[in-house]
Amino acid sequence: MAVEKPTSQLLQILERASPARQVLAARRPDRRIADSARFPFLALVGQAEMKLALILAVVNPSVGGVLLMGPRGTGKTTAVRGLVELLPQVPRSTCSNGCEPEAAYTIGIDGVCPECAVKLGRGESITAPDKMRLVELPLNARLEDVVGGIDERIALEQSKVRLAPGILSAADQNLLYIDEVNLLDHAVADAILDAAAQGQYTVRRGPMAATYRSRLVLIGSMNPEEGRLRPQIQDRFGLRVLVRGATDAAERLEIYHRVRDFQVNPYALAAAWAEETIIVAQEIAAARLRLGKVTIPSPLERLGLKWIRDLGIDSHRAEVTLFEAARARAAADEREEVTLEDLRAAAPTALRQRRSQFIDEFFTRQREEDDEIAHTLRLPGRKRRSRSTRSRRK
Image 1 (cartoon, rainbow, N blue to C red):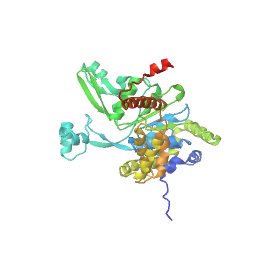
Image 2 (image 1 turned 60 degrees about the vertical axis):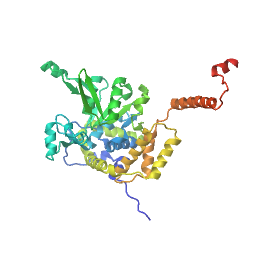
Image 3 (image 1 turned 135 degrees about the vertical axis):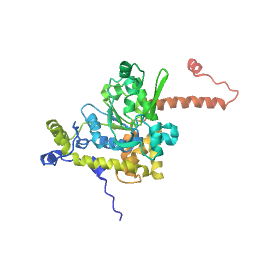
Image 4 (image 1 turned 90 degrees about the vertical axis):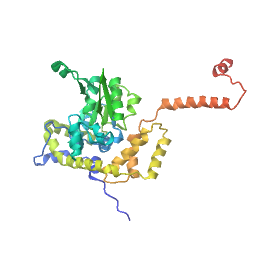
């Protein structure tokens, strides 16, 4: 009889709610706490789907980001900001010009500055580990703020025209969070989507041009009461999570207690959850390293494609998101092969809201027209009356 493998600490912690008030009552040793305490991600009560989706997006950026949809006051923004303490380290360029080893490998030594070329020639690294950060996009951000433009300070102080990077460049290898994403200016939204899809973008101002990297994890949140999200934007988010308030009275009371504890002493609450936060952060870092080895058995790939076909989903982002989220879950569970449980756990958030009634009706009308065209082509010499003529004769 096979012994079932225990779930990893990461998934165990995400799937349960620890009694924070009991932990707060006990004396704890001093720990290093951020100057600005955030509500601990793991202290959120319930909301297992939201927490898992955010973790999977951090473990595997190829998931395509997360869209959180729900009413006000359900913890969407609190959850995203709480992720900061769980973010892993990434290799970041130490060069003021932003040179990276990939440029030298793909373009050649001319792809980096002379200083970095010398360092690479000596076998030295031009990157250093740096923790991922959370970059929040202000709702009133202008297009110039997002993509960058003329550096106004340099222009005024030195009478020189120089391009300055924008928020998208600052979000490279970080999390970019857009609250109220459905209220975002269309031009700004389009620029962010293009940059996130390509991993880089180019700014042109007259004869000057600069290209910046934008390899980011996109996270958005919205309240459906305040307006719909354009289909073009919604399709770019890999996982979609419906965030509702707790229905259980005990859960709602526990939420109140934890919020009150945070208001009274945010540092004490952060300290109470520090141990579990460190464990999960380490698990996430290990899962990111393990991800490259995770495979999906062919039968499960066929099953996932069958689900998508049966649901009538046209977008190919459906299978990309489904399989990448399943791989991320397996990596988080310390495994190198995806199981049916991984696929089922990822499916609701990966496949939700990907069907379009408009597209279904559009293709139905188009098939009818194509049938008429095919029928006409099969009957040479026969004149087929137009639809308008037939309707007039009726």
